[in-house]
Image (cartoon, rainbow, N blue to C red):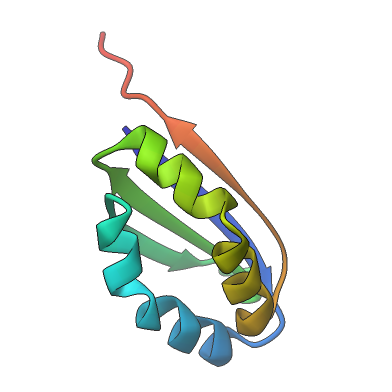
Length: 89
């Protein structure tokens, strides 16, 4: 399973500092960062992909009040996340 996220941020450098400071919390929630991108046409749009080791734990983490507070501190203006399953041929 993976979790694909999009954030629109007010200040990328501030967002990145907060995001990277939560690496241990991500790992404890079973989220392993695999990719981080910025949109070429709009650098305020950030996309990132986590491998999810435990879907229930990850869902609790992203909906926790602490995660909402961290997003506000990081300057997230809006965002979304999607849990994805691999589709086999």
